[in-house]
Image (cartoon, rainbow, N blue to C red; front, top):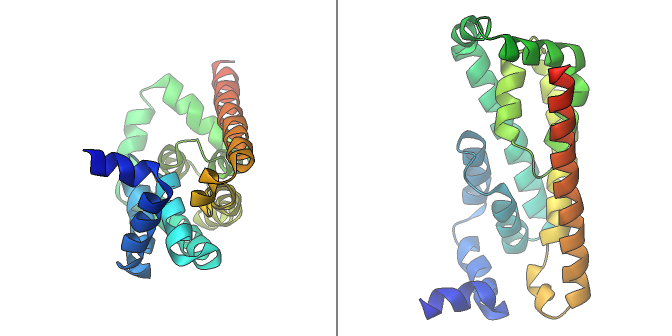
Length: 199
């Protein structure tokens, strides 16, 4: 137990995690991000931090960015072509769900872009909602390419060289403040959407 605590709470322990993860190779980091798109309980933030600290900022960023765009679009295509017809029959019987889809059809670009750009919003839910809407596939791919650049970029900037937090309390404080601002903005936007849907 003490070994695990030391591993996650000391500079040397965290460095050893990055070194061990690097041994799995670039493909492991890429596939792990894609897997997160299908299994949203996996922590994307932690995976991105692993990638950029294990493989370097540029390689880790490109890998994480390309993988999350690929994974999200694969979820979108899977839902659209395998489950859309059955799901829409269910949705038409539920007024609230039908209202949600109408909202996405009307304001889909703005809705999806903001939700996907924020690190603390449920990306998997957005992928499914967009797939069930009338949004064209190429439009959603364009939104993913733009929005995920912001999302992964913010994660990478906060989480790069995370071991330096032990030596720079100021950087740690700035990172925590930035994360808090992003978190509260995400929650505010979700409440804003809920109010719009209730009108």
